[in-house]
Length: 145
Image (cartoon, rainbow, N blue to C red; front, side, top):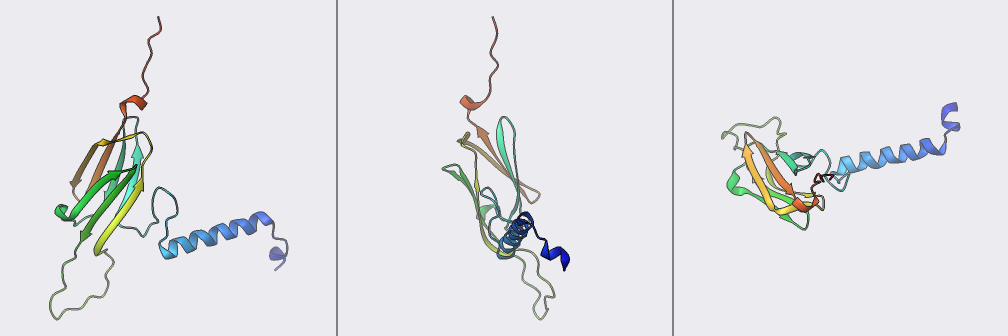
């Protein structure tokens, strides 16, 4: 009880920040501009190199004919649908943790990507999208005379 009497404003703000993060996580709200919280499907990893930005979407069991990848206004949009197998007739389901249904993920990209140079490949349940950076933005070595 004594510890609660001597709360500093900094710890109060830390508590409020923690409460906000918990609320965002509970309601599935985005926790940052670039990606949504942990409950979004598909789960993604985003990385970059000097040449490109790479996005890995972990989505096993997708039919690639029902998957769309679009880049527009520096936004990468992944749209698709995953259907799970129906349980056997007369059977019952005790737990169902895999995502089923339509999904849409929108990911903000840096300003220096080239929307004309996008590659997408789906292998072993992982969708890899590589967006090349514009050539004019790449660093170049200047020769000294």
